[in-house]
Length: 421
Image 1 (cartoon, rainbow, N blue to C red):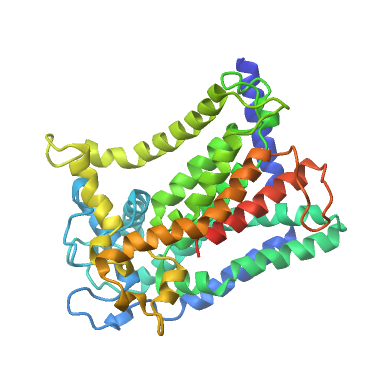
Image 2: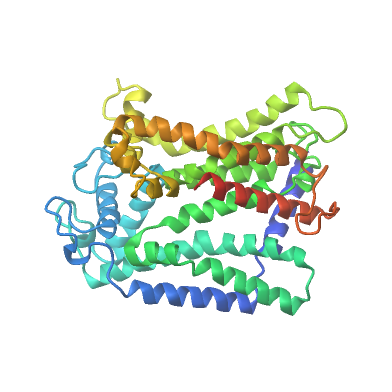
């Protein structure tokens, strides 16, 4: 059993090494993308020189991110989400808070203590510090976003069957198109945010969720039963998605699609016989334990270092949840998707026509109705697996395992885009 476990890990490492072998045209594409980011970063950031003119909270998102580094670096964990909420209070999930702490420590080391001095650093806009902040966004791009964009695009282009030269051309053009996408470049490198981290983690989760586990399951998943449904890759994908969600709550937009697809995999049968209830429950349990474990790892420190030992978990976590989802201030103070922003414009103007208290439940109900078709199709796809897959372009039954996996990847990306509108 130990040998089987060791061989599975070796197979996994080899597969990742082959996936991440990068060619010169792709490196040039990455270089052009970094050059574009550097040029955008030369322009003013959000709220530079207090452009917004706020009397209570200086600047914009740049100052908010810097301030989060300040408070996480200096304050105790139990104060991170409660300290002076009127001045750019922390309102992103725990992984962002931990990341802010790490970046605050680096800022103190490489820029100086003045950049994160508690209270005294508010509105700090030293040129060296701004260069440091811009660099951190590009660094996190390279660590989390670029690699998974490359992996995803390589999978999507691998089934074209063209020659090597044409394949590399199409791959490079595809990667460049994703990496220079204007909204992400402008928001992260102009306005100033770290959205590429959660997007990269989400792409990574889609990659692993749509891979087969057959080669790892030989001797590795004996405790789960022989299955190509929920195994090593699905677990890794679930962890990555939970991390993305714990970086930024906007990833919830993709969660219905992910939930439907993975639930469908749990119902998948490897033979003509129907899958037993016990096996289905086991598969659901594996994913459930994975999600719960990841969230406990992210959230438990806040309970461990709570202010009062008499605090319950609800007392500890509820204020944090309210900061992350401030629906008490109305739907449009929360995290809304594109459709609701459009519906708030004239002549529809739902923001003015519908009472604030009714907006969240009505939006939730309408959202569930609209995403239901995507979720049903993804559930069915996850359930069918490799047993039946029609290539959308040729309308023929495909026998290639890689094409089937790539079809699942396309479908999951399509479904996630649908549930996020």
